[in-house]
Length: 123
Image (cartoon, rainbow, N blue to C red; front, top):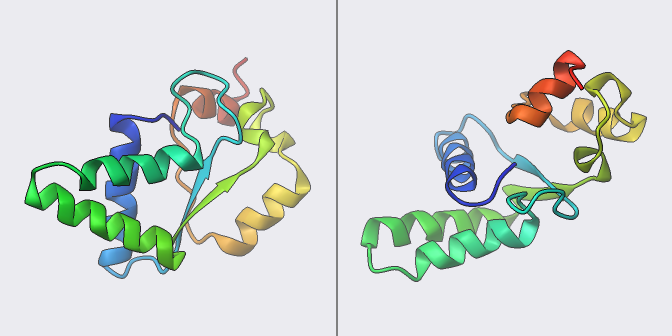
């Protein structure tokens, strides 16, 4: 959803799901272009890991190394779709996206105010 601290917490959750064995793959649905200045793109995911790895904290560097390994192995996959930058409610998502989510997801976490409003149809 958003770059910065929120993206770090998303990566922490992804890392936990993968490291604990709860998930084999985590797909992060990033924006294909920023609608708002804070919207996370695939390059932001990679840049967050690189920035954390370059710091002086050993624990943070180890965490960033796991994130980077997950990204390189494809266990964390960044997937962009134009739908996430559009104002349509969830029930109007493209059939191809709905099919992909149904086929490739055992759990879908929807977060953020815009997506909350999508689920409820609150425009």
